[in-house]
Length: 476
Image (cartoon, rainbow, N blue to C red; front, side, top):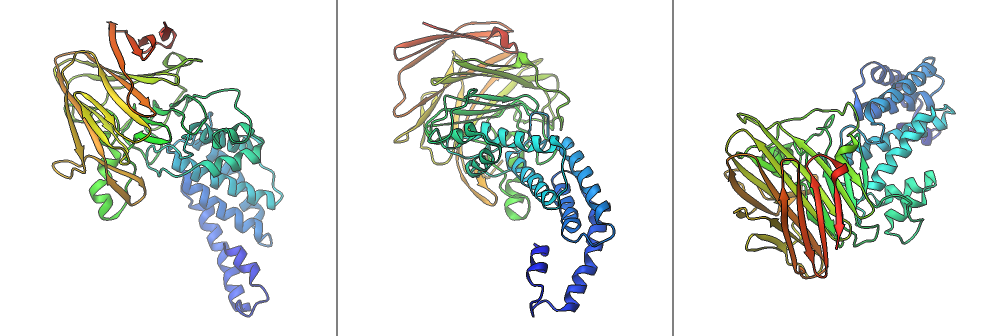
C-alpha cells in the first residue's frame, strides 16, 4: 500500500517534500526490523514480503540488494518448512492454507516486478497448493471447515489457479462440470502427509462429499479433532465441524474451548473426555495400508489413543468405507483395559430439520437428506442437544468468525465392559429415506463384515480395522 501511495502522490500538493523525506527515512527502520526480528510461518510470509517490497520499490537504498537476497532465501526456506511435499500447509487449516498461498503469491509478484527469479520449487509448490484446494472443495464450492477457519468459498480461488497453471480439470471441479475438462483421476482424493481424505460420488452440484481427518494436530490453529468426519450431499452440509467462533472477546471466552475440543466435532468421547493434543507435524506420509481408492469404493482407517485425564489404556480406531454414489459406513472400534462410558457425537448443520426415528437420526428436509443408522444390536441411549450452555457448551455452530448459531448434536451413549465396536450407516437420499437393511455378518478383532440391502441392490462390505488390502466390496 505505502509504495502505491508514495509514488501515486509524487508531485501532488498532498505529499510535501518534507513528508516524502520522512517516509523515505523511515523505510530502512522498517526493513531492519523485518530483516532481523521477523516471526515464523504465516507471519513470516507477510513480514518478509514487506521487506521485499521495500527492496523492490526503493532500490536506491544501499542495502536493498541484500534485503532482497535475504528475503528470497528466507521465504524459500519457510515454504519448505510450512508446506508438506503433497502441497498442504502444515497448520492443516484450509482457511490458513489459503492465507499462506496468497502470501507466497504476493512475494512471487514482488520478485517478478523486481526481475528476481525464484527457484522452480517455489512455483511448483504454489501449483501444488492450488491442486489441494481444488481436490478438497465441497460440491457447493465451499472449503473444508477444519482446525481454525471459516467455511468460505474456494470457487474463485480454484478458477484463478486453473487459469494460472492451465488446469481445465480444476475448472471442471469448481464449476461442477459446467466448463473445463473432466479430471482423469478422482473423484476421491487423499493427501498422505496432511492425512486429509475426501470421498466424492462425482463432480456435479448434488454429489456426495465427505472429509475424514487422519492427520497430525497441525503446526498452529489446532483443534483436538483427529478422526472427525464431515458429510455433504445434494448441495447441503449435513455433518459439520463446530467452526472457530472467535479468538478474543466475550464470544471467545464462551465458545473457544468448545471450538478447539473434541466435543465440537463428530468424534467419540471416552468417559466424557475428549482427545489430548497430538503431534504437531507429520514425520512421514500415511502408509498405503491405511487407505484405498477404488473405482467403486473408498476405504480409510486411522486411530487415536491419547485422551484427557483418562486412566488405563484406550484406543479409538475409526474406519470410513464409502460405497460410491450410495452410502457411507463408519466403524468405531474401541479397545480398552476397563469398563468405559462411550459418547458418539454427530453435529448437524443448523439448516437441517433433524428428527429421531427410534434409534435412527435423520433429516426431514424438503430436498436432500441424511440418516444415521446404528447397525447391530447394541442398546444405545440417544439424546438431542441444541444450544446448550450449562453444564457444558454443546450444540453450537460457527461458519465464520464471530458468527454462530445453535445446532443439533445427536449424542449416542452406552457403557462397555471391554473392547467394543460401533457401526454406523450414513445414508444420503434426495427425498425420503429409502428402505434399507444392514446386518453384521461377522466380527473379529481385525475386521467386520456387513451386508447392506438398499432397494433392489445388495452389497457385502469387508471392512478391516487397519488393512486396506483386505477392504472389499461385493455386489449381488
